[in-house]
Length: 120
Image (cartoon, rainbow, N blue to C red; front, top):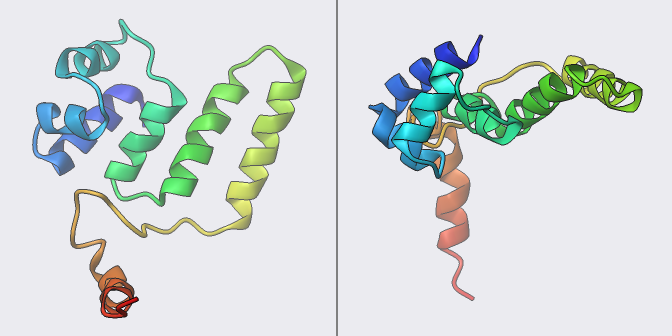
């Protein structure tokens, strides 16, 4: 998925590009520049976009870092990208949590209730 598609899909989940920009700790104009390709979209932003779409945050950030490292001319960074890809391949892809999609988060409420009911 390219940056434009990633931003459009995440904006649909968030409700709008303005809401998405707030989730990403950036501004709407910056997000539009990234979408149009006039501003680079770093691995942190791409990881957050993937997490908004429901991808496991760990997987989202590792995938984004691997993409950046893979584009490098540095041999060590290319080896690191291969290592990240190997780690991702070793674990099945799951959609665990989404900060803006409560349907994905239903299973996690039981633990929170137990923990909050324990007065210390």
